[in-house]
Length: 148
Image (cartoon, rainbow, N blue to C red; front, side):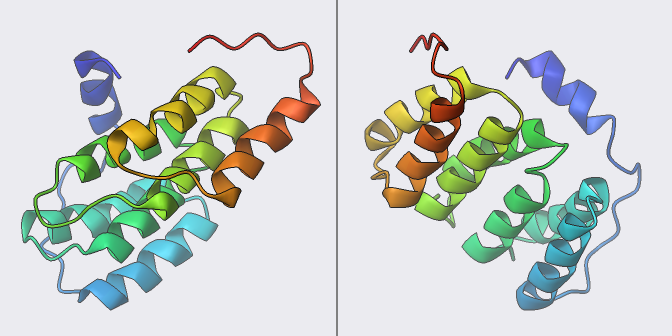
């Protein structure tokens, strides 16, 4: 994602992000509920203070990636990139599978296939869910040309 695109996406966030009084497990519950309601900007507003306070664990990261996986799929991709450079947490197959699902639902099939291809290079082994996510969508588009 281009740097300018990050600025554009960040402009969609609420301007003032409060200090989160939530514990990580409380944040997971709140973020999950907001994600189910497709209120991704509010889910990010719960998430960012935890990151700034270095209190976001992998479950919190995966929750917010999932919350953005619908209409805000670009945020899922961006969050995965940020998770990969987080000193405290490491992305796992769940993180990647969530982004794969977001990409496939958004018809970003080439990007999903590239991500699946790159997973081993990023020290993440694709699992059954990874392959099923991509193959299920590819089966619906038999004439699609994919470029890696």
